[in-house]
Image (tube, rainbow, N blue to C red; front, side, top):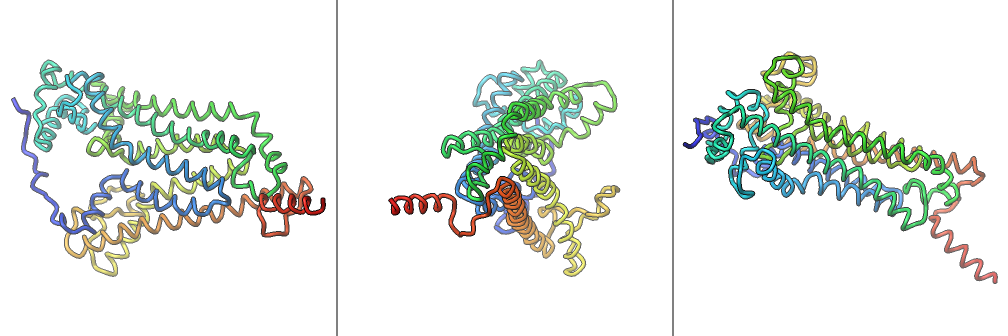
Length: 423
């Protein structure tokens, strides 16, 4: 028996299919991971460009580049792999690794509230993907409640692995940079400072931080462990059939932890992943200046990165509706303070005509505005703070700021030449 039902969404094929501007904007808008990947690239390129020296540039390029690949590119490989492994070995709903029924894991968490919702959700997904999910149902003895519990186990296992892998590697790369810079240059301290003062000053600034290395590493690992285990809370609330504030809250918000198309992580779990990963970056700091630099970047980047696009989009939409007479702002807003201050826009795929074209243009302008303001503005301010801190400590240790345009390495070479000449 093939599990299917009528799916009205199948008839709503977007009319902008062959318009590259609107098509690209609409697809990126729906997929938070793709959206953030594009914005991340726009932010990170100027951040690397504005590094103070080649060692800082190498560190930032290595960490940012590999993080970008691991966070945004590897899900194409890791998520299909872990999805299939979870369906076969954890849920035990498929017998073959290549079984197309593994796509059952694409079922929204919102459909796993109870067995009735699960039955409806599976029927809709079967029709959408044109896949017969009778085999997984038979392996659950035809019991939708049993199948629901198995699906929750599989989906939470995938989420835990994704948390551990992405956040762990992101934080781990910061520690790898510290180790490699020390091995390559023989120097301690924040790489951004290497050409701002003599080695003795930079090493002195890093001395007090060495004794707290294990404590800071423990903080990162603890945060990573808590993040990895957090899906157990979702599992507990979602799988329970007992009403209660906690269980009801989890079931109401469980869909926030879905993966679009089984691959694209949503905004909330992605924020949690980046926060845990960036904790490793902060904890790997080599002195108080680097700690402040990393904390400032996180404090400024995260609100801009995850909320800034919503705020800018709202402002652009209001201006467009007022001046250009479009219909971009969604007229059906929840009755909450946030939506009253910053009413959200209608999705591009649900707009038409002039409103759709203008909103597609505003969408890309939104991303460009955020990328430029964060990518150039934040490093500009923080680089000034770094120079001020180094100058202050250098003066305390009796080293005056060099009145020369040469870097420390160039000055060392000149001193050697002069010494050789006088001999």
